[in-house]
Image (cartoon, rainbow, N blue to C red; front, top):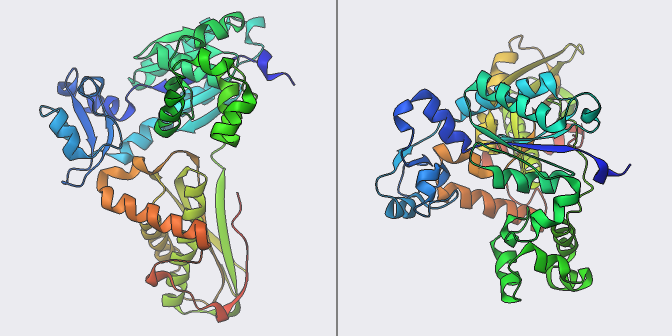
Length: 396
C-alpha cells in the first residue's frame, strides 16, 4: 500500500489543560496561566500562550517560570477532569471518523483516505472540528496532508485554533522554509548539533545526503531525514480502549495470605508500569483479577486519570483487590492489567508531584534498563518467589 497517497488528519487540542480550566473558570481567559506543581520544586505541566510569550514552557521548574512571568496564575491541575474531557473529544471523533488513532491525551490522527469520493476531505475535517468545538467547548486545530509527519507540522502552523491543508504537490514547498525544530522527533540536543553544522531549515536538512545524516545522528538520522523530505510511511493505528499490558501469577499452593497477595500485587503493578513507561505510554484503566481455588474468576476495573506512575497505580490496584476479595476463600491466581493506553510521558502526572519525584522515577528506570527490571523495586513489593508456580509474561 502506498501511504503517500493517503489523506491523514492530525487533530490537536490547543493548550489543552489550560483550555479545560478556562471552561470551568472564564476569568482565566486572556490571562497568563500555568498548570503544574505548586511547591518550590514544582514543574510546569502546561501553560497558556500568554505565559509562553514570557518564555515559559512545559517541564520548566515552576520557580523559573514565575521568575519569567510573575503575574501568571498558577493552578495545580485536575488530571481527572482533563482525562474526562479527553474521552469526550475521542467519543466525538469515534462517532464520525472511519479510522482514528489516539496518539496522546490531546491529539489524534485520522485516516480519511478516499473521503474525496463522497465529500471533500477538507470540508469533512472542518465540519468535524466544528462538532468537537460545539460539543466540548474546547479549541482545537488540525492539519491535513499526505502523512502523519506533514499533518502534524501543519497543525503546528495552524495554531492557535486554526486549520491548514497541505496538498500533495505543495508538501516540500511548505516544509522547506520551516526551522528544523518543527520536525517531530528533533529535540534540543539534535537541534543544537544540526545548528553546529549550519543546518537551520528543513530544506538544508533535506538536501544533505542521508548517509551523512546517519553518520552524525545514528539510526534516528535517517528517520529525521525522511521527515525533512516529507516521507512518513507509518500508518494510522486503529485506536482501541482494549490496548493493554497485563501480568498474572498462579500459585503452587492456593493461598489466603492477604499480606503476601498485596505485596505481590504491588510488585506486579510496579513491573508492568515500568514496561509501560519504557514504551512512553499512559494508562487510563486498571483491572485486578483473582481466581479462587474452585476456579471461580472475578475481575474489577476502574477508570483513572491518565498516568504512568506506579505509586498511583499501586494504590488503585490495592483498592480494587480489597473490594474484590470478599469471600476469604483460597486464591489460586492473581492478575493486574493496565488498559486504555495512549502515548504520553510523565509530565502529565506533575500536578501532585515535583521534580524530585520525577527524577527519582527516571533514576530508577535508568537502573532497570541497564541492569534489568528486577534490579530495583519497592520493599513493600518484595515477593516470596517460592510460593509461585508460574508467571505469565506481561502482554499487550
